[in-house]
Length: 337
Image 1 (cartoon, rainbow, N blue to C red):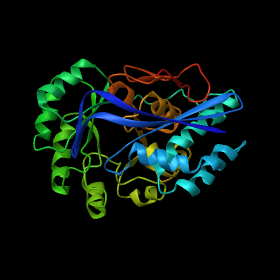
Image 2: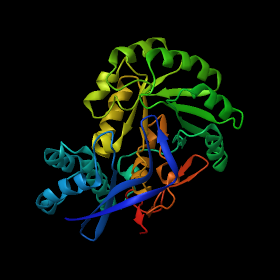
Image 3: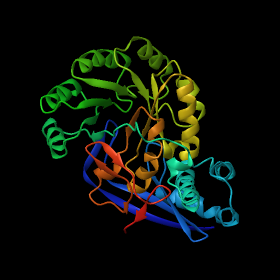
Image 4: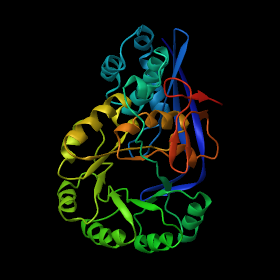
């Protein structure tokens, strides 16, 4: 099996601001695995919060080329277990590799990935579209630029209620709020009351990731459901989040790919928690992989490709929140640049 690594600086349509950072470019690493006449594609983006760079991922993958070249016909689960031994210190790189292998494996079976897993897509959830922190005027403008049935609004400012109050004047869409660890317990409890009046569906990660006592208080007292993000990174975190959050947002790049994400989603469902998968501003390569998990999800945030000034691949398409799959097998991805 041959490994090909490509790196990109994905330019965003608008500066993207959350409670702790702003960026205009999203560095991304694309993995291609070639064998037996088939190619599979995977992706992982860099992230300063988790101290992950494209260069570090590339270096870690290049170190294990002998292992990759020795791979024959392992199942994706077997492949992940073996690759995890080499990349357990870099789950982002492992994610890109796992996505590519799942894609390759399904293409070889002449099936779409969700078909290989036996999923029915009849009741897929719609994706939200993210509005990053900005002036209220610019946030309204971004929302008007792309009318959408569900918006995920980034907050964590001193004007949070004023922002949502103004946005609500311009749409009847569902609102979801992501504070990216930007609130205190008291702020979250107060804001939840006001935001519920404004048609907000849930709050995502209001508190710092390790504030478990605070998470418990919110879980027991918030008038809105609380979804974990930064507090739920890898598989063992799902159990920790039980009775501290109402649901978990699984990120493929953080947990190491589709293979562990499916296990995390299954565990969360068994614990009676809501399930969500979110993106990390990936191109359509990573977003198309997420799409195959939709039948197992309550919510999804897979708008990464929509946030880009120019995409690097084709695959799934999004129309008014509804996801349409490619006609191709695997994840359905084709690189265009």
